[in-house]
Image 1 (spheres, rainbow, N blue to C red):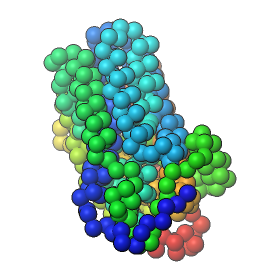
Image 2 (image 1 turned 45 degrees about the vertical axis):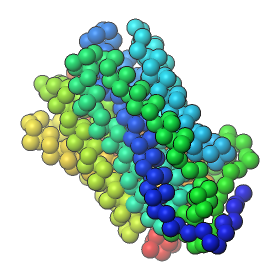
Image 3 (image 1 turned 90 degrees about the vertical axis):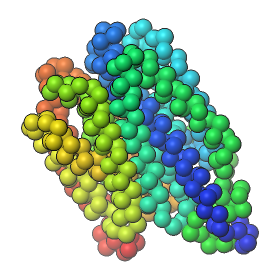
Length: 426
């Protein structure tokens, strides 16, 4: 149902909006860092416990898969129970499950904790959280804010890696696990005390809204039914499948391949874990700039052609990667370029989702599109490990992923119905 907001409510307290965006940003940052940690643990677990790279990759792939699958159901649960309660529960699950992994000695225990449990937890603290917050708290500048929040997912997955890799190198694989668990659990009281549920709870309307704006409130519908109904309705539209397919490629080329295997790719060329993680961190820093800029551009330009540019350039860079000399200069150039493009696809994808499916359904439908992202990431994480073990090289995997990026570019350009969509976007 909708809640009519009294006319005397205004967006006159910007610090409240800054607080909401800040807490959401930090939660997404930490969740993405948790999801990327198996990439740091791959080599230490192989050395310390003798586990194969393919078995570790499989657990990472399951976590990535669940990270996506949980998203649309999490968005539906947020509509029923609220963002704050869902976020607190998810952070507790992440923190406690990572602590449980400290005593693991068998691969199935890694599969349970870092695959299944953290997969469910991080799935609730994913891009659907950002989409829900943006749609609830903002009317103006949605693209810019979503760009900032989306950047946190890549920044979190990359920025923490040098520190986590250094901890693993000097103190063993348990050290980064303890650091991740502590960071996650610290966020719980901050969210509980300082995150408002709705603008109306603080006597406000969403940023950029009219004084008589009607805010979407809780729904009494069953969350499972809400998520499935949204999927069935969206699946009847061609644009859903184009968005799903392009986001599949996005996950295939980022989290699944580079995010999970870049350290191992560098190791094959004689580059240590800590320097390799440093290049990933550099990608994370440049992603913060690139994805925020992408959000700003999404508020002003045709989202389809932004996606065409992002996927095309990403694909070409992956095709080139196995043929460079892996010198510090080459890796720095690749890292800067790839970082700027890492999750720049999120703001234009969310904008197209909002246009196609409406304000209430868009976060849930976007959750299903993000599921496509994570299916792609899971496929790449697992397939790259299998091909590396079979061939002794990542070359074919990188060329395959790059080709998929070029194909996704042309799919993105086909989204929408020509002139009608262009008119809406302008």
